[in-house]
Amino acid sequence: MRKPIIAGNWKLNKTSHESIEFVTLLKRYVSNVSDVDIVVCPVFTALCDIKDVLLETNIGLGAQNLFWEDAGAFTGEVSGLLLKDAGAEYVIIGHSERRQYFGETNQTVNKKIKAALKSGLIPIVCVGEVLEEREQNKTTKVVTTQMKEGLEGVSKEDVKRIIIAYEPVWAIGTGKTATPGQAQQVHQLIRQLLTQMCGEDVAQRVRIQYGGSVKPENIAELMAQPDIDGALVGGASLKVDSFVDIIKNSCVMKT
Ligand code: PEP
Image 1 (tube, rainbow, N blue to C red):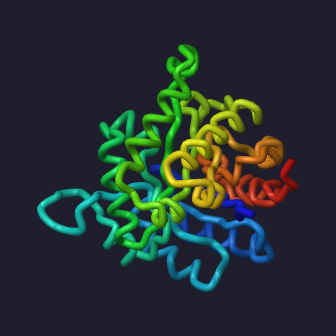
Image 2: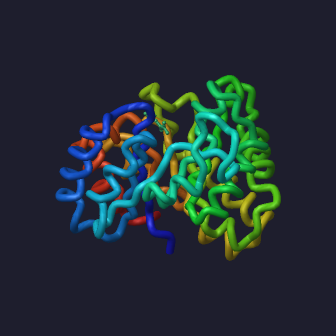
Image 3: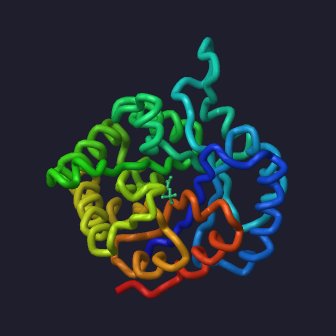
């Protein structure tokens, strides 16, 4: 049985002060939640500050990106080593905004996954097709390539530690959610790919989140799908109320 995981990706939002205020409230509302893992991913500069507020709570801390070298002449970059030092346990890798605006490729995603694992971080690896690819029936091909190239050379033991987030790019920040059926189809594909690459045992353990305009109103029907194990939430994770409702509504029975 895979434990569901709901993660909030705050993107480029919230000062340290606002982040502290948010998690101070959040921890009160979710202190009795034990059947869902909860993670917040603030901007780098807020990590250290909110780490202390999250000590001994059921809320994990994640970063939104990392660089693959530990240290050196790489101006402006942040390594896995430093993220661990700042209190992060998770790191989002290959978000579509990073692929779209910062030139990330399956090859850089692969290096980042390996670096995160080496630093003891849990990677949340994003895959997903853009609208044009879906309309041209290329979703399977695109997601298969992202999975194979992204996880190239990662050991089976390490794959067990990874979380995959299927995020159809056309559903991110647009208010358009994939239907539960559309999402399940790709989640099932991802689990089949994991089975081919790493065997049934590993594939059954890996948690696959859905991301793309998740809200309190649609999380339950998404979570009811057999291969959807949680959500990566953007916009609706920025308000305590909606994030808490998503967490609470995510505890549903699987079909
Ligand atoms: C995201 O950015 O990962 C995301 C899913 O955003 P939103 O929930 O706003 O669509």
